[in-house]
Each structure stands twice: as C-alpha cells, then as structure tokens.
Length: 427
Ligand SMILES: *Cc1c(COP(=O)(O)O)cnc(C)c1O
Image (cartoon, rainbow, N blue to C red; front, side):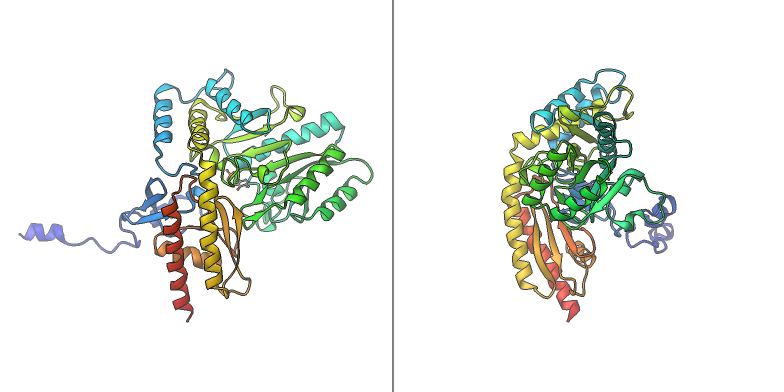
C-alpha cells in the first residue's frame, strides 16, 4: 500500500497551466518572434481542432486562411500518403510531372500563362518583384526601377517584401531597407496618379504597382472596383506592370477563384501561397506571356515545385473545383456577414461595421470602443472559437472553405457568447 501511495503522490505543480504541454521548455528553445496565445494545438479534423488537454475549438483561423480544406481532409491525406510512397523530392534539374500538372491547372483556371513555384508568400512576392525589375530593365530600359505599393499593405517578411509592406512597424530596426519602393494610400487613384507623375517626371522609373485585391493583415479592407480599374488603365497607358498579391485571397477564399475577379481587372503578374497547398508549404508566381522574361539561371528554389508539394497542391486545387467550394464560400460568407452585422447592431458601442468578401471577413471595432480585437479573440477562445486579429481594431474570420452552414451558425453563437461575456466584464 505504501509504495502505491508513493506512486499516487501527485507530481509537483507544473509551471504551465497545461500539464501535457511544457510552454516554458518551448519558449526556452524557440525564438520569441511571435506573440503566442497560451494554447497548444495537437489535432485537427475538418473545421475543428483540439488542444493538448483535449479541449475542442471551432477553427475560424485555418492557419490564417491557409487550410483550404480544413484539417485532415481525406483528399489531402490521400495525396500526402500517395506522394510520400512515390517520390518526395528531386531537383529542378529534371522535369517534375506534378509541377507541370499544377502549373497547367493554375494557368487553365486563371488569366496567367506561366507559373514558377517557391515555398511561401514572401518568396512568391520576391519572385514577382525580380520579374518586374527584369522586365523594366530589359523591355523598357529602366535602370533604377521603382515599385509602388500601398500603405497598410502586407507582402511578407524578407527584406524586399518587408520593404514592399507599407507598414513602418514591420520595418523598424531592419534598415537599410531595399531601395526602389514607393508607397501610396490604398483605394486612392488620384494619389497614385500623382505619385507616378512625380516619379516619372524626368524619365520613366515606375516598373510595377503591387497591390492586394483586399488588404488582409491591414484590416480586411476590400479593394474598390473603380480604383482597380483605374489602376489597370494607368498601367496600360504607361507600360507599368500590375502585380496582385493573392497570397491570402486567392484559391476561392473571396467567393471567386481569384481575388481580382471581384474587381473586374486582370493582373500581369499575381502571387499565391497560403491556401494553395491547404497546409503544406508552397508559393507561386504567375504571369502572362508578355512579361514572362525569366531565362534559365534568373531565379530558382531548391524545394520549389517539388513532387510532394505539387502533388498535394494539385489535389487541393481539384477539390476546390470538383466540390464547388466557390459556391460554398459565397453562401457561407453571406450567412456569416449577416450574423456579424446583427452583432454590430446589438453592440453599436463597440462595433462599427462588417466588411469582406466570401470567407474573408472582418468585424471592425470602433476606435473609441475601449476594447481591442485581441480582447474579442481571447474571449472567443475561452468559449471554444478561434478567430484572429487583423491589426488592433479588426477581428478576422477566415474559416476553411469547406465550412458548413451549421458551423457558421455555431461560430456566430460562440462569438455572441464571447462578446456577451466581455459586456458583463465591462459593466
Ligand atoms: C501571409 C501573406 C504574405 C506572406 O506569406 P508568407 O508565406 O508568410 O511568407 C504575403 N502577402 C499576403 C497578402 C499575405 O497575407
């Protein structure tokens, strides 16, 4: 008995709230580049995830608009296991049939003619920036090309893409930044025209305009149709390339396959990553034939377009069309916005509006709300719903594209419960 009693003595209290996961050991070993929530996720299925203690959450983050088919979707599981048993990696020194098949799918389903594959959104934007610079040098004789981007944009964390990102907070302490970028307010055609006129005053310098069809990180701010059509017209008049960063909004998220379809324009170049692989790392640069100026040796990536990632991404792409997820996104998105608008009307002291397209939506807080997006995110987490801030004042909802009508209603009910709990605290 005594030995059993000894065995049954509880272990000394763990420094973590969560006994099955050691956050202290984690933080000892991993660089502190992220402000993390105290939550360790260990399992997922569809739109649900579970933490290390077995608590279930409805996942309206989806890896930040990345898990297109949710978690452990049978099509993704099958593609991963088949590809793992066949061929994972070979060099781009050789033809990779899966890469060709994925490029064909993407070019057949978009305005682009050619694809290049890399591993992330930042890397895709780097590739697009290099392509636009080479085009300016070789086709227009521009020696110091300038790329115009928007304030509050987000294009990635490498040096060139963090420079392209029009948010000083991401650039602080990383000077010297990459030369050749200029920023304008988003959705403001007059400001863009004025910037081009100034930059091109003595001789043409503006090589490209790089924009998100809808600013994701910058606060779920949809692009204005008239603005983008004006941008397209300016580009055509002056020989400037229009690059659209579709990293967050591509692959059906907006209720169209590509974000640019919401705007009635076609880009010369666009970039993809997040949703393309449904959770495995892949990025892509797509372009039309007229700006396809890369030649052998110009650009490369060891892992880019390998048999494994392309096999899985192709399965994700085929699922999006075969399961008609674009229609699902439209219907679920409408219901979600309707429910969110109801919350705005219930709590006018806190919320200003709902904005977004398809299944990328933002619940926008008033600047004088007295609470921030993080407060709402934490309250939602406490009742079992994962949502993500987009800046200090916007709560972003980006569920998997397979989300059901019932799951949308469940998310709205949980969010209402979370906000009610904040209201009780505020009283
Ligand atoms: C996430 C994101 C990026 C960066 O992608 P990474 O894969 O994190 O490098 C670039 N542009 C947009 C619009 C994004 O949302």
